[in-house]
Length: 114
Length: 113
Image 1 (cartoon, one colour):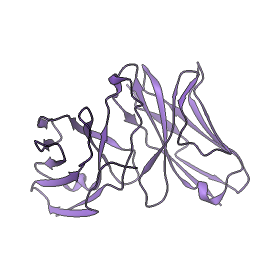
Image 2: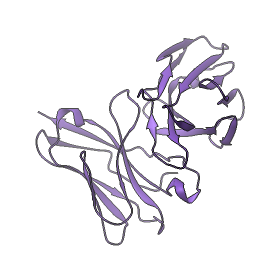
Image 3: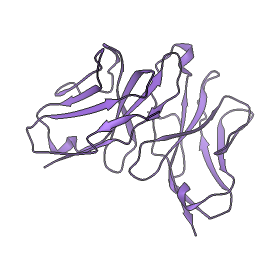
Image 4: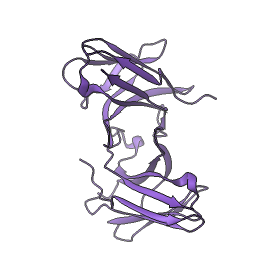
């Protein structure tokens, strides 16, 4: 079972920031938070991951609370092409030797409106 | 550098036939994963393979399903005697040795009629 909970859906206006929440209250100390998205009918796409510090890349920013029980994915300027299902996943990094399978929940459907 | 290649993109089989789904990992990637996505559901892990070895098959149905990743050639997910409940999108992902850099393919959509 997925160790994360996400609202089923949200929407935002094109050009505005999209803030996607995720709860992971049972996360263990060495588990990372990963975000993937799945645009309609395509394979999942990696977005970003982090352990405890905030992270930013060309796609998004990841804000993890100090107690690590929740996080927020921020798309700073959402476009229509960002409409997708976004999955928040907690997992051990492969380099620890743990099984690297991903456990997907139902994700959150983001709809970006014109 | 081509991404993860899956073929066919769409596959239609009658009940009782066999389905063979192919996955060519990214160049240099030696780990392959198969996931299944039933309609209106999230992706579920099926199997994790390295060249010539099955590492984790905890998500594979116990009957009719098998997977291989031979020394040469693509990884194959084989479903024997397909039933309507096997209709789903099957996604393959690959990663290089010693890394969790997952890259997914575009999937094969299996329809059993």
